[in-house]
Length: 93
View 1 (tube, one colour):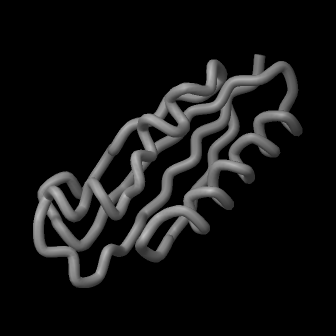
View 2 (spheres, helix red, strand yellow):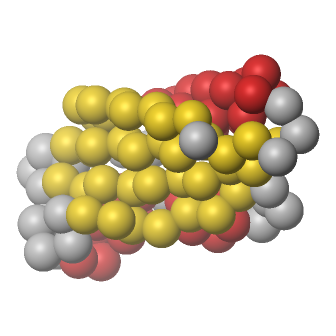
């Protein structure tokens, strides 16, 4: 088994409430948490309204499959979140 970790730092300019922050993040946990090979959590910037950090852990039978899954997640987040991805870090275990 191969494991990959993707951490995304997201800027949410102009966000004024926790409710707005949840709406702008677009239900990342529900969307990606349904995939049987992916675990997802909001891992940082919990107290800041204008920023969010999310970590995704993917498991697959090969390294390229993990990389493809993480690339797909990153692409969907960049297109589906009302914010800007400032940083994306990947780690393969």
